[in-house]
Picture 1: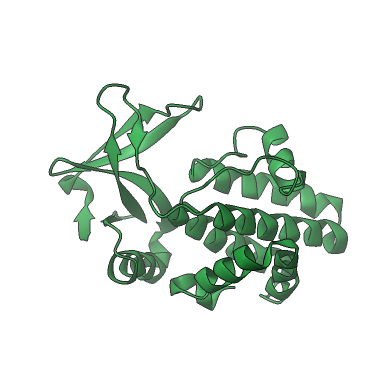
Picture 2 (picture 1 turned 90 degrees about the horizontal axis):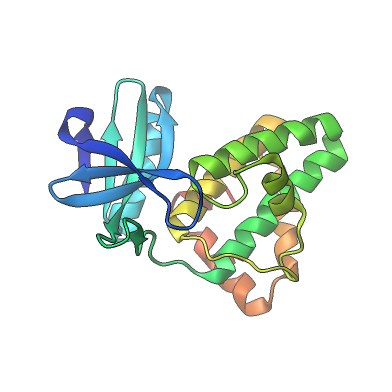
Length: 219
């Protein structure tokens, strides 16, 4: 939709309507956007690739913000003027996508714990907690919250519905962390095996979704 510079936009913070945290909001020509992902200056092509995929292939209204030290991708939202919250912040959310993302995240964690040991597992908890917090997804609020999202049984507990755009960002970050911990991308095959526990319909739909856009090159 737009490629903008810092001087073109106004960035502020609002209180999340349900969680005790603030959310960065970008304003441009009367439109508002929430942060989806942040890239370093060296990741310019990755940032542009995500932005192009979201806008051209998925029809999302997004902003690519170019700054000297980083690039960031923002998705359009509507602000609830009465309550100061967000309406329709991340459309296209599908419950099965959240379940699939949680299963992949847990599978990578258990793999690290089993193959690399407790010390690396503890470090991964910190790293994935930082990612969850950055994306404003449940699980990044505290060490206990991270532990819960990594170990709870998603087939027994209540699974939240995360927006597809943020799930995409989470799975990109998760893949990057996996490569750091394992030194290559071979871990993805083992992680994808965890999807076998899903209902066939949800698994097929989630697997098809994974083959679209930038995620297809990762998972």
